[in-house]
Length: 559
Ligand SMILES: *[C@@H]1O[C@H](CO)[C@@H](O)[C@H](O)[C@H]1NC(C)=O
Ligand SMILES: *[C@@H]1O[C@H](CO)[C@@H](O)[C@H](O)[C@H]1NC(C)=O
Ligand SMILES: *[C@@H]1O[C@H](CO)[C@@H](O)[C@H](O)[C@H]1NC(C)=O
Ligand SMILES: *[C@@H]1O[C@H](CO)[C@@H](O)[C@H](O)[C@H]1NC(C)=O
Ligand SMILES: *[C@@H]1O[C@H](CO)[C@@H](O)[C@H](O)[C@H]1NC(C)=O
Image (cartoon, rainbow, N blue to C red; front, side):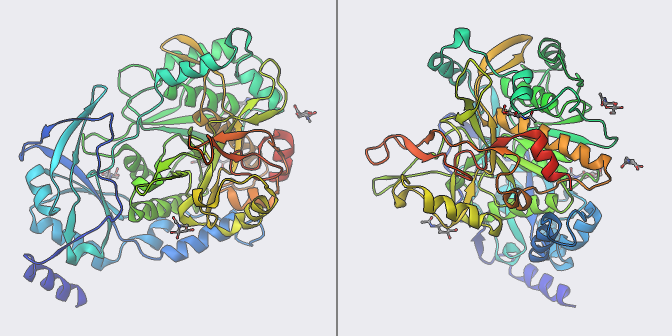
């Protein structure tokens, strides 16, 4: 009955008011994208509608219960069907949104199993009519082309409360690592005699023996890549031939989800696959590659839709993707957090790189600077991985901060309970904190842990390349190590680690090499002079709790 009444109102007030859905979303074109021109009204694009979910608070409570070892529900993960029963939008929401789309002539829509996303193909004319204020233009960068609106969009006030955001309108894909950055680091180090990080160096440092490889039946891990670049199976094979000695491993990816273009191999793409398969050796590995068919799609969002549309997924996912937290709407980030919770209650571990700009820097309009956190690194519902370097680059000895390691405090998400003790202890003990106006001590602090991120050897386009650096290297390494621990848990009949953070912080650093030397970079201004936070005993916002000591970490997590 209520549904009928609401639809009636919707139809009767179709000429009525609209409202902005995504306050705070940056709509400026990133500087590396060139404007081509207006898109013709008859061209087609794909928009993604994030429908308002139900029971998000219950979902959060469930995540807490299944991820906290002191709870009786620890490890009692649920299926995607059960997630769907919990969060799927109300009948009213589904009807109102569909009716709104249909009344504009939009009928070509696909949903996901959880029914909380709708993806619809329509002409530009229809899209601009549906989203008052929007105006679609084409942009190019590096041979890549996409369609975005240069102006903010509104939605009809009757659907406003039924939507979280519309995808494909504003957010540009972040650019990946460029060759310049790689070679810049090369000049900084005495490269000629440098040891370089190889699978053997990593396995030695983190105390992995030849016997520490996967053997459980249903174990699996994945890397997700959203840049216009691809891993090449031949690169992976060559990498394993050159560097895969001394431990049993696989040389093939088991499954590629999405489009693996025939284009050039990317260093980033090669790095992720080569290193998750070296740390998580002999474990079935998937690659989620640049999903999305349309120039209007957001690849990261497409990947999240896939997660809600696939019942069987790898247990561990590592992702090197991030954007400035202040460039994204809170509505969008809140919804992405809910997607991470949906993954967590299924027992999936989501690992994000902490970023390669240290504490970051944002120039304030009134003058002065502040640090600049990155999202999803700053999400309370993912595990964030920072970076380290060998203290002595010629030896496999202890690790110090890699000055690029992303870290800091969210300005959007409050500090989750699981980390309050650790972060407060750091803030209290640290005598050389940056000035208060640079960061927000009430926010979610990251990273959670770290691994080597400096001077990796990678094979890309059949060529071995040294000096590849960044937290996109450390993240798949930690991912592979967590997969090895999952493997041992499966062999004992235990459930997967799932969302690790509550348990990780309870370990209080057990099983992790504490990194206590060095600071990461930040604003180059008089106040902080390029220095952000510094590593310290126990947890710190540069390297988290430290880097994995596999046998000890395994023992601590094999219960
Ligand atoms: C979800 O999966 C179903 C079944 O495979 C498919 O028909 C649908 O198009 C998918 N949804 C999206 C948004 O791709
Ligand atoms: C683990 O590694 C550390 C540092 O490399 C080393 O001191 C320690 O002896 C190793 N432990 C084991 C059990 O191999
Ligand atoms: C590698 O994994 C397979 C199962 O995928 C297993 O049968 C084999 O024993 C593993 N190798 C080692 C050395 O454990
Ligand atoms: C592995 O997966 C298959 C089907 O997905 C299932 O039948 C089997 O019980 C699983 N094995 C283990 C060890 O969990
Ligand atoms: C600080 O973080 C909190 C969330 O923990 C947020 O509500 C607040 O707006 C932030 N302050 C600033 C100045 O960004």
